[in-house]
Amino acid sequence: MQSFTRYERARIIGARALQISMGAPLLIRTDKIDPLEIAIEEFQHDVIPITVKRR
Image (tube, rainbow, N blue to C red; front, side, top):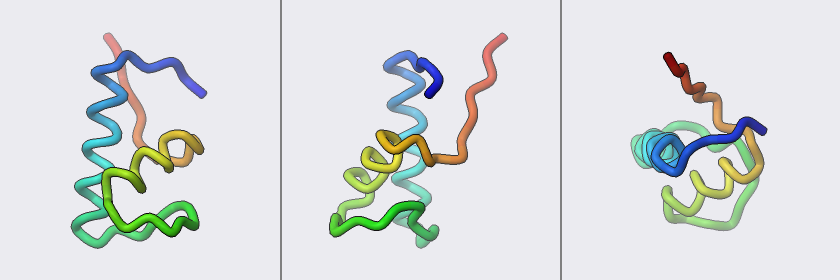
């Protein structure tokens, strides 16, 4: 798992939570309903297909 700053982590989780709330398919099996909680769990399992490019 790549090391992210707290700002990158917040941006990734927030963007993924928005995707989930708009109907994107889930990448893990979970009983959670809240998009933010699902996004956090996906982040912890390192399955979010979002990359960070640094200059």
